[in-house]
Length: 144
Image (cartoon, helix red, strand yellow):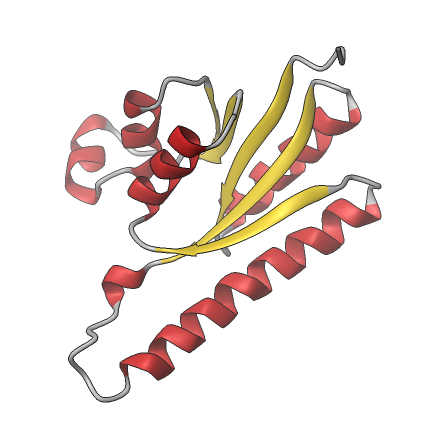
């Protein structure tokens, strides 16, 4: 048995500065031996695509490519520090996809970003981190 506190960690990311901080925190925790296997999840928001429109497949391809580019960027950062990770790209609603991943994986922890929203803003803007933290059965480390 390994000495790490969290064996398998889900790290949902996007192309924001906040996700960059999440990756840096994940690297720090991996180097310190607190976390083991990292799974970096980039979600392209399929609900933004109107599949009834003529150019919907082009938009979907663009979003998938952007999600892959995000993973490639973070893979370079983690590899430079000698940290191996699994990289997953998925399409759908971010909250639903993260919860689905946790329910169907064997995760011990989620490391994700949290925008600095007050309770009213969380309701208006549908805070992904707030929903995930309330609905999953594993600990969630929120990076601000």
